Length: 114
Image (cartoon, rainbow, N blue to C red):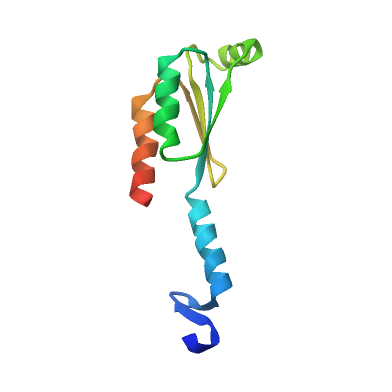
């Protein structure tokens, strides 16, 4: 097969442009992570965490309410923000407070993937 019929040779065989596009999209999604960050108003640690993680992944922020605070207390969290990182493979990581080492772990991994 040649490139004249729209097929392209890749490491595992010949694929058409559409298949190649799908494969590339799936490969990117494997490395895709999302963060949900519960914050409280006027919290510098919350703002800093959101700022750093939003540079490397989609971040959704939620202003915590009384029910959230109670749920977090039951989970053993005593400070804000509460961060949950969802990875493409279903694994997640969760922590509270400004955790510079955790933030670096994700920002350095993401910059290595680029």
